[in-house]
Image (cartoon, rainbow over the protein chains, first blue to last red):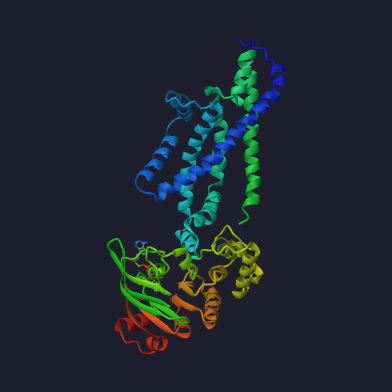
Length: 220
Length: 240
Ligand SMILES: Nc1ncnc2c1ncn2[C@@H]1O[C@H](COP(=O)(O)OP(=O)(O)OP(=O)(O)O)[C@@H](O)[C@H]1O
Ligand SMILES: [Mg+2]
């Protein structure tokens, strides 16, 4: 009943390629986080402060990002835009999809963060003659980023794992690369087991570094 | 000089300030007393343009605060404000708290801003706490930090909104002492306060606020020794 022979040698041989692909995974995840944080901040402020079309826009974005499958979001930037004649490379499809998703999720976290800051912080900043922009960038946002630091870390982990959907739009990140070798050698289990271990180590590393960074960043 | 004429302020249907006329001259210390909800904080917010107004005018050194063409960010540099809830910026050390606005608002160089900040922290007696985060400061120290932060902008006026009412009783004294020092240095001040002793000893005039109007305004001595309005008398007998 159990007559599958494990062959790990091919996996070992392509390990350098897998590791390189995991760097691609990290790269797209990091970029999507940076974009997601910036857009997420704007969305949360729009949802909190804006009225009319701008608020509506932010709400739609957040609702779609949080309440539809991440895979569909990716497909939208791939096949959806493709149907409209806009053809992104696999890298940009994944980057756009992940950024869209990150921004939506993070926006809700940020909104909670902004709400947790006493309104007098903004008043105090303005009373010193700071512009609205300065009050936000120097006073409010740094505090928000601290409040949502751990949810943000979680979102980063989620982005790393979510990027594996990239293989479905032909992106050669870790999963795509794994799939490529697996179907070439038919050592499907071995390759995906190896990839799973690499994902696991990446996530653990991210969590570890994030903890370390927190102690250096937040001395208050 | 701060000149207020027939100031009207609504929050929705709520008529909070109902025709305020007030003049504060250079070097004068005015205390504002009155029951909770009578509009004292709102008046301060209106004076430095943190709140819109629905009628009347507020003029500061000839500049109309709520005029569309007024550069509020510039105007606010001439008016320091200290709030009831301590709101030092928690993510910055004491010296960073004070140096930030001179740096980004007044565009001072970093070393200049640090110099100014140091000077003001010494001024309020926090020279030992330069690199400490607000969370490690007592309420009284945080309030003095807030005063230093406002002073670092070299304001012409200081607006205090119940700067001591959120403090433990034993910490009130040090903050009042700092305010008294400022008054002696000739700073023009409007102090919303529940500290009748301070109002009586430090201020030139006292305004008693009741339900959105100034019920009575007079010298500290007159207000406390022989108030004319019955409402003032009633209020004072309650708080004393
Ligand atoms: N942002 C706001 N929106 C709506 N109503 C407000 C707002 N701020 C204040 N009010 C109302 O306006 C009235 C005056 O408030 P204000 O804070 O100026 O009173 P105060 O005299 O400072 O009282 P306290 O001594 O409690 O600080 C109150 O009835 C208050 O509920
Ligand atoms: Mg008040």
